[in-house]
Length: 424
Image (cartoon, rainbow, N blue to C red; front, side, top):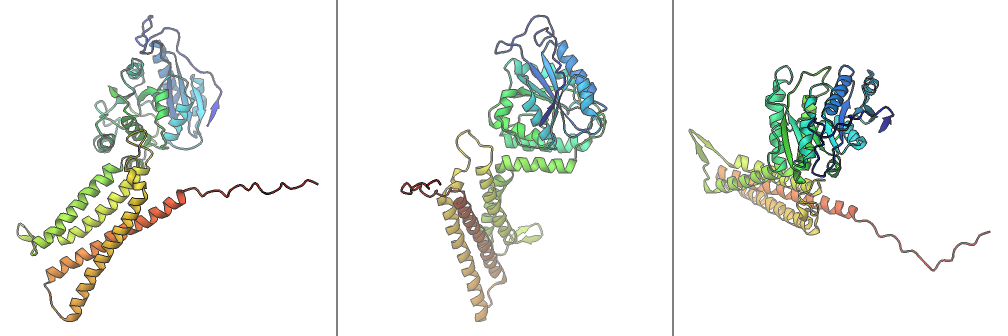
């Protein structure tokens, strides 16, 4: 990250957040200083106007301020236009919306940071309203919500009614509660010291979800301010499918209990129930005029449930996001007894499955003709036990290997009985 030395614009001396000549002190008794961070990639048509608008609004409100424009590889003269408008320009070579914002957060000098976009979509005159709850110590993170004011011209219907609500729902589940009605809003305010504690790592659009999940899990107070959403100036950099997938990946890594552990436990339970049902009701289950054989789905549920539980537990244990700041979630996953147990149980289940298959084979060789449904139930159970057992055993083996690799080797003891070489 490099910084282009240009003049830093600071609001004039009328103090306070109310725009009056009297200072409105924050909870700390000091006038807040605000940095507006704008990521920028080829935004020549709008970046200058955004810088002007932010500086004028903050100056009118009497808030000392700066605008930091993070150029992410523009080739249309955006950095020069931003600097001419009064911004401090930071160059971030690593591509991505998240990379640019993180660079801007690091470069910001204000006590409070406001993040927005350089494409004129966000309602920058609302900056004082976003800042006020932070300055008054009423919130730690404030979002400017857009959905109520969005129109077909400002936001595609697929984003407004499908993508954003779906991601907002998943983020809420990952946070443990609903913290926002518009989780993908990029118009936010927070303290500089607080954002550093979150250890944000995303490089793309998924930074919006990561910030909310980490903030909620850290106990931050999150609130919203209704804002408008304007027509974008220039070409959108958003890639719906790839960016949406990156959001899902991040939610999966930070909250595996949402997409893996919960569904995995449910599938495992359903698999066990259906397997028992196939023995309790050998002829199947009547579904209207049809007769359904639960044995066909029980094995699938058992296998997928086991795999999802194991994968989710490992991700939850090694995730950079923990429930508390001290203890890891699913701490038992890292213990040697757990990996040994998985290996032992897995081998036992696989042996039982092979034994059932062997019995069925011997019955077949003897010429006996057992009921087809009975053979099907036994064969399904055998295959499920073999696959589930092999999965557990392989997990135990790989975990033991990785654990052994993670233990640092003891260095050779330093010998003290060796005379130093003589110099010539």
